[in-house]
Image 1 (tube, one colour):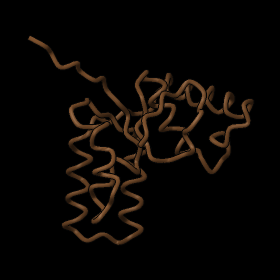
Image 2 (tube, helix red, strand yellow):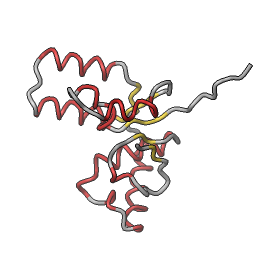
Image 3 (spheres, rainbow, N blue to C red):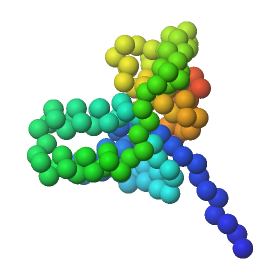
Image 4 (tube, helix red, strand yellow):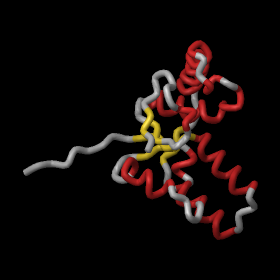
Length: 141
């Protein structure tokens, strides 16, 4: 009997995690092969970004309920001393390498990358800012 190899857990970035909440988003189908069947984690930062985007666009009650159900079903990685240390070290490493993730406007992205690094799992994202990030394993399509 041949067993199917299991694929490990992943952290999913906001763009990919929230794609199925946006009608007509092509990201859902594109990233399904990387996500289906794997334990998925999102950062507290992703939760903040999802809620911010929904409120900014004045989503109605039904769509907000769908968003909250999606968030409620997620395993969320919250901040703490270890994640803060990884975040600070990541910014230093990115600054020294001349990587754009060190820039202030990428603070939110840095929290998400630090979450994946801290947990020790790949980050699934469609955002090019994560390419060549020190110590980050990126899965993208």
